[in-house]
Amino acid sequence: MTTPLFLLRCVQLGLSIRDLDLLTIGTVNDMYTEMGNDSFDYSEVATQKDFDQF
Image (cartoon, rainbow, N blue to C red; front, side):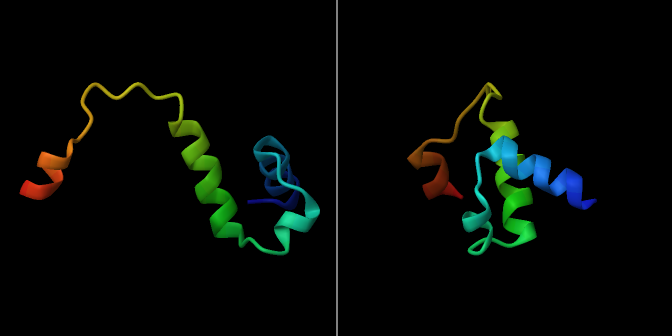
């Protein structure tokens, strides 16, 4: 990953330079990945019963 790409992802997430003092590159990448998952429509969502059986 290049520095400009990293900074672009930070802007897309709405992070400030001050926020970057508290976050690692890996955390920013995870946040970016999760942002992409927010709009995904899951066909089936686990319930508490599913977790209990797991």
